[in-house]
Structure formats: C-alpha cells, structure tokens
Image (cartoon, rainbow, N blue to C red; front, side, top):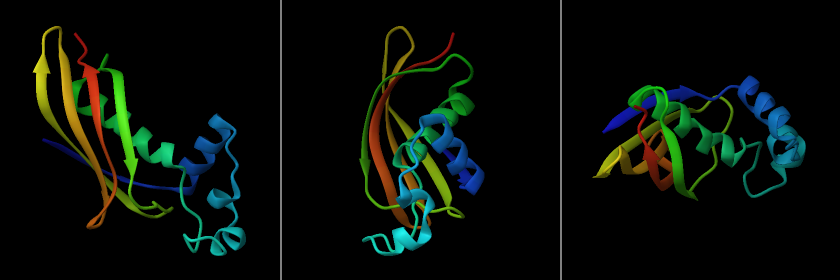
Amino acid sequence: MYEKEILITKEMVDAFGQATNDYNPIHYDEEYAKQTKFGGTIIHGMLTAGLISASLVDHYGPGVIYTDQTLHFKAPVRIGDTAKIIFVDEELFPKNRVKLTVHIYVGEVKVLEGLAFIIRGE
C-alpha cells in the first residue's frame, strides 16, 4: 500500500485549466458555482485523477506507464483541500505489469475510486 497527501492550490487549478483549455465556471466563478448543487467552486475531476500519475512515479519510479484506468468520482474536491492518494497492488503480472486499486480521500470522504493497470519502469 502507498499513501501520499497533496494540498490542492489555486495555482494547480489555474495551470490545469490553461493546459486543457477547460475554463468551466464551476471551477473559477464562485458566484456561478454557488448556484449549483456543489454550493461553490470545485476543482476539475481530471485534475484529481491526475494526482494519481505523480504518485505512481513517486512509488514505482521513473518510467512507470499507465495502460488502463477506471475512475469513479464520488464527491467534489475544492481548493485548499488536502487529497490523500492511496493505492494498493492487487495483482502482479509478467513484464512488470501491475493491477492496483486507487482511492483518493479528502478527510474521511472518499472522492475518487478506481482500478489501474500500469507497467513499472525498468
């Protein structure tokens, strides 16, 4: 099992929006976002999912490659939240392939869960 905590910052959200050209007001406009079911701005779901990739490199080392990922978004993440990424090796395969479960929490709330397949770096 591997765990890592990452503080979500406005700079991260701004950089993700710029990189993807995703300027949905749910991520940037507090007045707009207050009128939604979320009651305020939330970060991009794929930014949350992207935290997994950096964590994989931290754990498995350079050269790790995603081959497949399922994601289930369970709850929103906001600027200022600390996301705890947890993944567990479930099955090892030949040629450095690994199946793992992935969970991200903010406090006690699970915000994302999924299943990933990777190839560990050589």
